[in-house]
Image 1: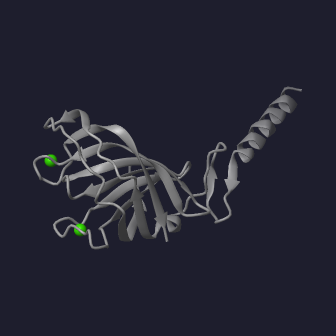
Image 2 (image 1 turned 90 degrees about the horizontal axis):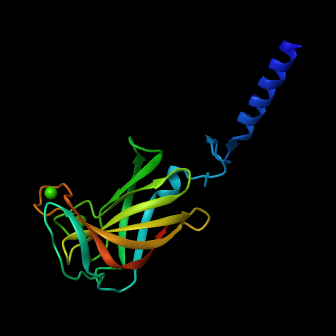
Image 3 (image 1 turned 120 degrees about the horizontal axis):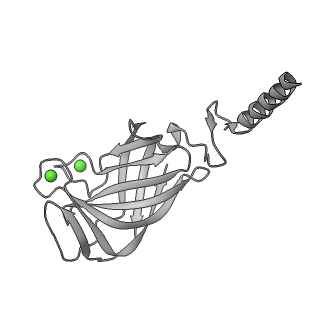
Length: 185
Ligand SMILES: [Ca+2]
Ligand SMILES: [Ca+2]
């Protein structure tokens, strides 16, 4: 009787484990808990075109090496980045993205004008976009819709390398959120 109960228990556990696995249709099997958006590396490759609402938010509540203030502008956008490099993150289940700007607004002194990551399960993304006019990265959070290749969201902060040593050392909030859209083609 005890053996029979144990066997039934194992069967229940096995069945629930099977239910939490899913073939997302591209030979990737994941434990998804209902969250998997089916992201694969190829979804992020190509040319990214980023538009941003025209706005002039102020830097607020900065922490880090310096305490900058004043307004920035989003006049450097729209921007095109190509080719976008996509590689796995060491720190989380996500793809990291990295690219230089491709259009006339390219800053010749910097090759890292778009960077960030997109979560493999939720398609939630954080991106940093170089704003040459203000000398800082505008930081945005959005969600990628795989079927359209379009990411939408808003930008609420800025990251600054105040001593120009290649490492970001100052973070600020923006006084208002700015909508952005990234289209991958
Ligand atoms: Ca550049
Ligand atoms: Ca620095």
